[in-house]
Length: 110
Image (tube, rainbow, N blue to C red; front, side, top):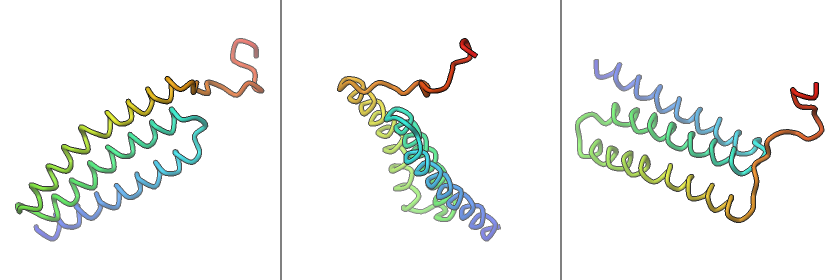
C-alpha cells in the first residue's frame, strides 16, 4: 500500500511539473500583462497544490508534512494577493488590456 501511495504522489508531482510548464508557455505566449498574470497565478496555485499534495503523500505523517502544509497555506494566501496587486499596479500605470486584434472584424461587423 505504501508503494502505491508513493506512486500516486509521484504522479501528482509530475502533473505539477506539467502544469508549471503550461503556465510558463502561457506567460510567454499571451498578449498582455493581465492574461500573463492570470496564467502565472493559476499555474502557481494549481501547481503548488499538486506538488504539495504529492509530496505530502510521499512524506507520510512526519514533521516534513507539517512544514509542507504551512508552505501550502502561505502560497495560497500570498499568490492571489500578489497577482491582484500586480494587476492593480499595471492598470494604475496605464496598461490597458488587449481585447481583440484590430485587424480582424468583430462578430458585429462580419
